[in-house]
Image (cartoon, rainbow, N blue to C red; front, side):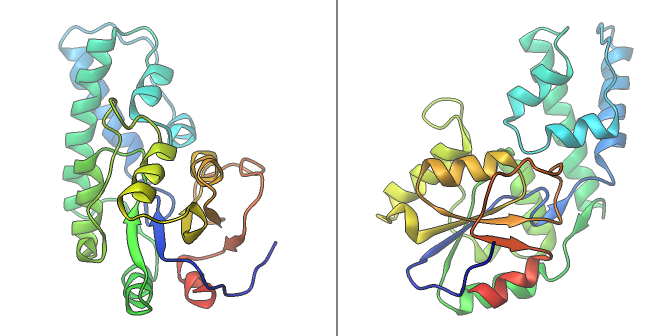
Length: 224
């Protein structure tokens, strides 16, 4: 499915993992370290996820990820290991772990120069998002970041809805850029247009439809 360049888009909202950055190269080692530390503390962790299982969970809300991976733990135990995974993941990124997709900086600069507002719509926690953006040197391109707070904002769709209210934008004036079903779902819930990142982490057929398909991140330059 293709579309020609269009008028009307005012804001471009990006997912993070699988869209701007890939944690694929570090995610397993981070989880294994956190799991081992927690097992050493006496926790009864039965399941040790594989890299494929971890990547399949990417893009989901954090609480859902840890419930799916560690159903045998209590909510408090899952929260504790979640906090440690976040610490280790951010440390790894700051030390060069993970991969930023080619053209990240130049693409964001191009979009900003074209007059678009740039926002972030991710299920990730704020320290993770800011670590990715700051390490890449692109944090300054983004509007203030809205994240899931488990109170008034519990889903990625509610993140987009918050931007719609905050900036008084109709949904069809926002383009959501992402690689997973949760990105597509958030866009469709709010009447936003959707660009699917074919280079990301989604398995074949996960995303039902899209306005644009991106083979690489800087394909956005040809659209906007």
